[in-house]
Length: 208
Image (cartoon, rainbow, N blue to C red):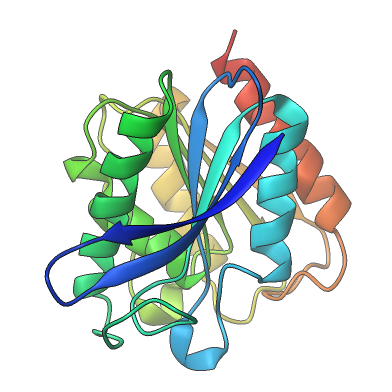
């Protein structure tokens, strides 16, 4: 597994700090998106690291970015607007760097940004959202031509809305799956090993 820091240009003002973890033969690539920048979210978050570990275990490449204004990424927080451009730029960079299926993964704010950008990501093989924050807004419809969507959340998530999330997944039919972590809250102080295992299984299923 090779690991390297990279810089990804979004436009003339914004360049994203990112980390690429690349196995010798990648089964695919996942872009992993971190929680809210204004509340300490970064690519070093515990859930983001668990998802990156799942990618490594499954033999997938992973790219973790810092959204604009976080860490060494330039620019400023843009209330979820420019952050969607960050997703698109990083996804395009990753698709050009690693051949094979491309998946979006996001935790909290990152899941909402990924969901809002998903329809504009070409050739998307699937998505995995952890703890979507319904306090920030509903998830937009998942693109029907973008492979399966797995959502993992705690049933005591203080920033989620379980009835609305269940209705969202049910409306997707076979394309969507919801996995509940019993007793889990939004921050995943426990349960990361189970989360990681579910992510590994999801990626393995995509490779068939």
